[in-house]
Length: 119
Image (cartoon, rainbow, N blue to C red; front, side):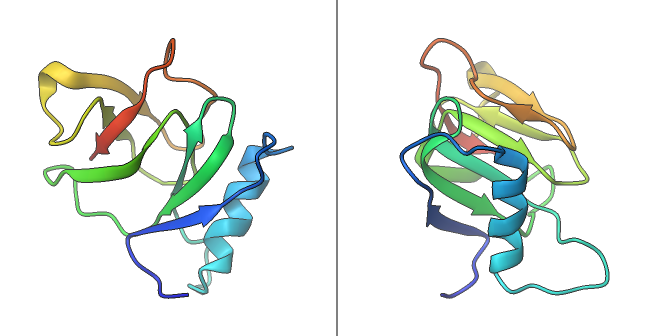
């Protein structure tokens, strides 16, 4: 599997038993090895860590927006920085949805809310 900034990985249809562990294993499976754990963010297409999981490793900086395809409805951050999530694409301030802080898990972003972009 090629490693890219956003690498989709499929999780089981059932919710991850422990989404933090599931995320850590998925990041580690990308094959990036260092003396320290590689930071990353895992996003699921459904609430409660269900559906297709996308792993984000490699950050573009807070001034650069990345589109999320497919859109995300739950997330785990194993990153060392805060990330902002937006409805739709293009990270427009008017579409701000939520932020995810280092070490934070969010089973839902709101009633059927989905993130389409991040920074």
